[in-house]
Image: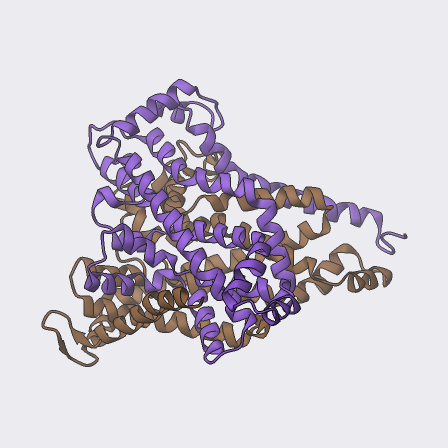
Amino acid sequence: MLAPYLALLLMFGFAPVFYAFTLSFMDTFEWVFWGVENFRLVLQDFRLGDAIGNVFTYVAVWLVMLVLAVGGLSLMLDALAPRPAAVLRTSFFLPGAITSSAIVVVWLFLLDPTVSPYAPLFKLAGLETRSHVVAQLGFPVVFALMAFLAHSGGWIVVMGGALKGIPTEVLEAARVDGATPVQTALQIKLPLIWRSLALMAILAFATGIQMFVEPQLMAMAGSQYSRPDWSVNQLAFQYAFTMGDFGASAAMSVLLLTAAISISLVVVFGTKFYRTD
Amino acid sequence: MARSTGKHPLQRFTNTTVMWVILGAAFVFYMTPIVWLLLAAFRTESELFSASAFHIGSVDSLLATWNNLATYNDFLIGEWAFNSAVYSVGGVSLSLVAAVPAGYVLAIYDFPFRRLILVLTLIAMITPNTVVALPIYLQMQALGLTNSYLGMILATAFFPFGVYLAFIYYVTSLPRALVESARIDGATRFEVFLKIALPLSGPLIALVGFFSFLANWSNYFLAFVLLTRDELYSLPIGLAVLISSSGALGNDVASDIPINRPEAIVAALLVILPVLLIFLVSQRYVRAGLLSGAEKG
């Protein structure tokens, strides 16, 4: 019964990682082993520093937005009666349907003052064209907005679950002691969902540093938005597809994988995930 | 019951007002794009610019837009939609067949390497799939499985999150005694799964299917590297190609094909609507599942 899954785990979990690891030490033009040459090559790439800077700026902006908004909105929803809370939660969750390349398409419209429903806001800020808006906000903020609209609603639902898990006796005791709803939210509920918020931030960080789709697709709006080497994953892609250097691409992927798997290990061994065992 | 001891009524009023203002602003922020998009699909290119943002267009405009989309490379967008459906149905079905029994076995039985498989599953689940897309491409290239339905479906059938969900589900809601008594009665392990566990797994299958569909349908990077022939593209890849090649959202590609902003909006809706519909249909179900999962986690 375990066999089909094990086969997939081996083929798409273990094998690609192992294969990329092997390739990263090979000259894939001559197919000979050449040690850490690929790593030296990609680490010396002058674009890498900028790409790392871009990605970290984006992740920082996104995480701040995510933690503040998801934490705040979840606590507010938890203070409401079940029905309005459910309606609002659903409305926060629905934009999650805007996925993949459609996220970028939709935002290219939203950021264009000539067609955007947010046009009054842009007018207020004196921004008249999309290039003004994008220049004003900066790419990291634009990508953070894209990720936020698509993913924060799902996390608000998850936090709703975590808040429901708080025993009623605890909340009752707080009320008896005279705590206001705000005090209850900040001093009782927040510390109890802090772990969930931290987990969310770690997972968002792990996903964020791998970003590819958003910067890659900005070119849809024309060459002035094209940033083919904005993120680290884009660089890895370029090595494979533009330069045909699979070894260097594998080396870049291995570096990203090392970061991603290290984060995974911290989460797996540092949280309750494992204790359901 | 005595409500709200202490605090001044005015303070309480202010807190409530501030809260509703923030929630209202959030509601507007989240709902605006979807409502705007749905309405914009009924408008012509010039109406998008001239009319107010929430102007309601006409069905005729939508039909004209659709007609332009359909004539793009002999209804290539139809092929993309078909491909997306094949990739998703194939990927979701295979992921269910693989993940549900695996989660069951990991939850119910003890065997060598069980813990190792669990840990590997969790690591694979947390590691973002974009990071393995290129390694998977390199491997599939070596195996000759790029540009094929089979390659895409196999690659997306690996869904460790589904195994985790199944594992949690069986640990928390399948009574061990039920399994043990069936075993004593002489049923094989597979029979127990088929006749006892599976009939109780409706909510689990819905939940795993839901997330697996979402992951499949919205997969971009993997499809982008595995598929290079345009007749094999999925809808999300096709959408990006359609817009890039026509210059619908930019102004530096001069093209005479009738793909402009309305076509871009309707094509984007083709990617969005299936997910939106599934959200609306299953939201109560999934939310209940998520909530119970979160409570137990």
